[in-house]
Image 1 (spheres, one colour):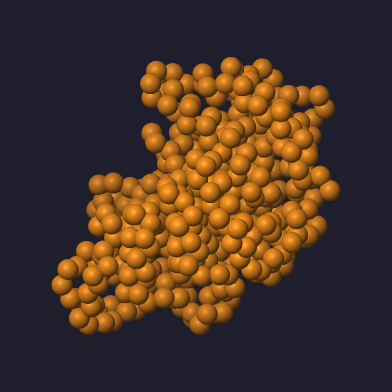
Image 2 (cartoon, rainbow, N blue to C red):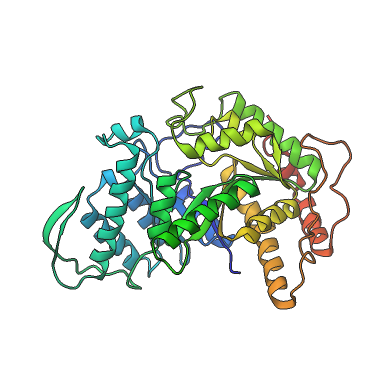
Length: 414
């Protein structure tokens, strides 16, 4: 199986640990960050949407001019732009980038946030509107003659666009954890996005999306995208110490953590995805091999907020657990964003790819990334433990990591 990697874009040096809270785009930093993603082997970068954020289409266009291969995923809320206009904007971006555009739909999980930009529809209607929107986009990209549309949410006559996507269409991603999300995504999406939950719950969600695809008459299913916040260090002990330092910052409400998302305070978030993460967190701090949930509790599950903690080998093994479930796209974003992107590109992406290539070539598992990596260690800083014996490739990674232990192990010290 081919697995591709995603990470979010950052527009300036602000992050959840340094508390800079810079609002403006730092163009040299944006350029450096985009190139770090590409140099690190990432395939995509998510350009997020929020009512208070910069325009994602403009940012995505800039990213494509800073890179050669990296594909921007433009987050789009249907209430913010008419579908015929979005079809042309996405196709224009696709042409400028040589066919790299992807769009990720956000129906909206918070009525208050939606109302900030005049959207008064309830959740069920937002998903119904999203389904109609996707149909219009695809028809606009495919039609060579003018067409009319008279739907529930959109109506127009005699529209045709001469702006064609490079490859005829643009991948459409849908995310969510509600039945409405599964229905729309299963029926229409090329990609379906999930937040990092335990393996059992993730398997259930993948099955739910696949069932909706079957009910819609599809012979295929959307590619599955799962998102995590890895915390890595050269040893298990250092990784857990680092994880608890990060948690202290998050719990102290001193990190950036997108204040716009945290405005609800201690109230339960309205979206199902965040509610599910908080439920998982109440069930325990550590799940499966390395999924750690206190980071979700500390931020009221504001977005994708569950961590994978351990050495690069442990985190690579945990990612491979989700690949074995059927995930084809893995999104990883850190807390010290730029340094973490560099570390992931050096220590995690190569391990995952080498293990998968080795499996494909030999039919054997666990010879690059040990199948017992990270098993049986406590979810607290442990004294004098390096996580046990490792395979040859794991040892090479640790040796390389050890040369950089000062940064990997100490970068979030206060």
